[in-house]
Each structure stands twice: as C-alpha cells, then as structure tokens.
Length: 304
Image (cartoon, rainbow, N blue to C red):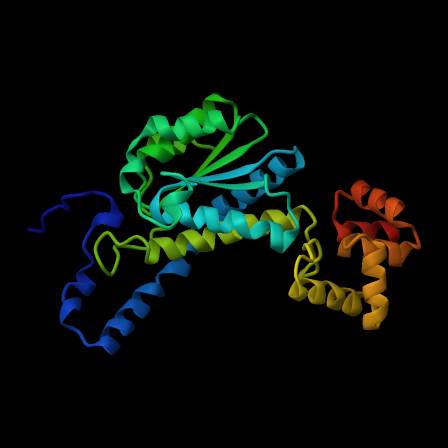
C-alpha cells in the first residue's frame, strides 16, 4: 500500500522519475531535466482562461490609472521584480505602473532572506506603505501556495479595496478560489530535486508573468501588429529599433525616420500618427488619446 505524501503540496513531493539522479552522468542529468521541463508549457496551457482573466484585470487596472504590484518571496519574488523592471525599457511605461515586492526588500534580490517570508504582518505592512487602493491589482506569487508574507499582502490589499490575484504550482485550496479574484495554478509536478521550485515552478511562473504583462501591454496599445511601438529610446539599440520600426511601417529612409522621431519627441507612436495624418506632435497625441492609445483602432477609424 502506497503511503500518502508527508506534505500534500505538489511542490514538496518527491519525483519518482528522478529518485536516482545522484548516480547519473552529466548527460543523463541534462536529459532528465530536459524531459521534466517539457511538462511546463502543457501545465501552463491548462490555465489560459485564468491567465486571460488576469490580463483583462491588468488592462482595466492600467486604464483606471492603477498599478500592477507583484508580491513574492525567494525565487517567486525575484521573478516578479524581474518582470516589473523590464516594462519601462520595453514598453515605455511609467516605473510606477509595474512594481515588484520581495520579502526581505531589495537586498533579498541578491542575497537570500528566507525567514522574511514567514511574516504575514510584513506583507500587509508593505501594502499600507504603498497606499494600495481600489484601482490597483496585487498579484501574489508563491509556488508552494503557502507563503505567509504573500497571503498577508493579498489579504491587506483586499481590505484596502484592491483586486487580488494568486499564482501557485500546487492545487489551490478552496478558500483561495473563494477569496482571490483570480487564481492561476499550473501543476508542473514534483521538481527534479525535491522542493527546488526555482526549476519547473520558476519557469512556469516566468511564462505566466510574461503572458500577463505582455498581454496587458498589447491590450493597452503598446504594440502595433507585433511591433513594440511605445518603447523608450534610452540607448543606441532602442534608438535603432525605433528608427527601424518607422522605416518598416512607413516606408521611410533612415534619415527621414530619424528626423520624424525627433519631431515627435522620441515617441514612435506619435511619429506614426504625425506621418499618417499630417498633424503636429500635439494634435497627433490627442488623436492617440481618443483611440485609447491603440494604433490599430486609430487605423480602423481612419479607414471609415
């Protein structure tokens, strides 16, 4: 008779397929890790409806002037901070729009602060410090589903009127489904090394966060076709990309694209509207605002 697991959390259970991994060669270890990694995308695919709901909630949050705040500890917290930090250079967002909170503060990004995750009160206090309110969307990340710091933050966020989402890699308890506005649970199975959630669970977490943030940026007009048209040209690579987008979409030579970008104040989207309509920078920006920032919608309106 098979004994029940000592810990019901999927992330803490032993993987029978890797029980003898310590006796394998380097190539065999690589093969078995790769085999386990192939379980990740299918697990995420089971959660697409919930991920879509989170994208819609993030879009509504941004249109209301609110913030998406990721909260996590350890690997989960670092992945939230990573996703948030990549939004300003990629999509030209205000740094306040996406925020990452990690138990133990920013020092925990570089050096483990494992005990910090045990305090519900500390998680709630950060929500007070940030002035979380009804326009905000607080998204908790805890692979094991049980991190007190994260649940403390989400509980306080709900009390302050914010929307609350939760990402875990084990079966969610019923109370989570009842309390939180959206719960995403890709079940990637026990880790190659028991409890090492920086592996499959961490990869699944990054996939989900990428989908939420990217989906929200697309929905709020930061993408035209599949081009990043709201990036900030803060270095040579991004200036080059901005110019190439204008060259490709508007059929311009490099010098003309560079001049148009300069007249637009460095905004690719504004430059495109200026070119299409003949409007100056101010009026082009007004046209964009009326279209909710979505170039595709502006093109449809212009086409009648």
